[in-house]
Length: 306
Image (cartoon, rainbow, N blue to C red; front, side, top):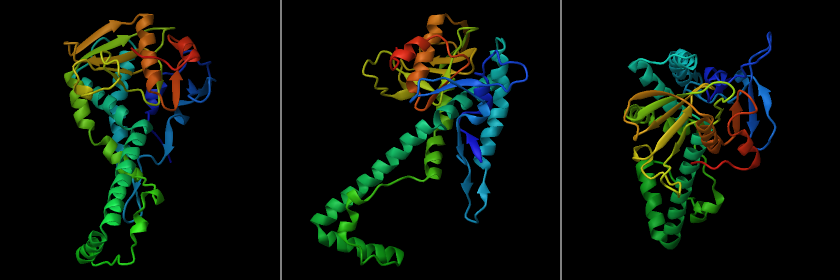
């Protein structure tokens, strides 16, 4: 079963506002490999088969993670809809739920999964390389290792040759379950940090819409010209931007001392947030219209961010 790594309700917030009567609502999407914008239903976008479904020991399917994500989305969806429609305040509990939703949006996407999976693979291959090098240069250590393994497990690996540990023969790939579990493990910490930062909810209107992408959580320290995040979310000059819908975006930083502010966006600010969002995309962009602040710059080159 296809499961969304970006919530369907979230993608619906970027639908074209001028969908003809009787037509299914759609967004405009463009892959990074192609420059053509195409209509697509939010239902069919940002999905992966059984992304959050895992097999139990008895062979049955475990849907608990998908169900949990659905419950969170059910709580957050009306909050985003309300502020996108012009509400100018939210409750503290709603702010907490938004922080959790944004944290999950950072951690549940393929870009994060790919990074975690690549890291696990490199660590595993590095360990094999270390063992191969050690045992090649110290055959006695290799023999002692095999004896200890048999003593600890009751299983023999006497036939194992040191050549079998050659790292060139291996490509280690982490299981999907381990990647998803590790990716989501810091969600409470991330949401807690976001809540401690100052927020601005930046509001825009037609035709200066916000866009989103497959990896919409953007983080940058604009004072760091080398684009190295250093302490990450804890860095004093770090800035977070996250488009909540075509009408509203979240901007969070330590420099903003107010827990919550609302402000009207200029086309320049919308363009800046859109280009930041596009810079973190790894698969596709999503927009309510094919023309938006920043669209011309996206045509000509990879967007620079500031």
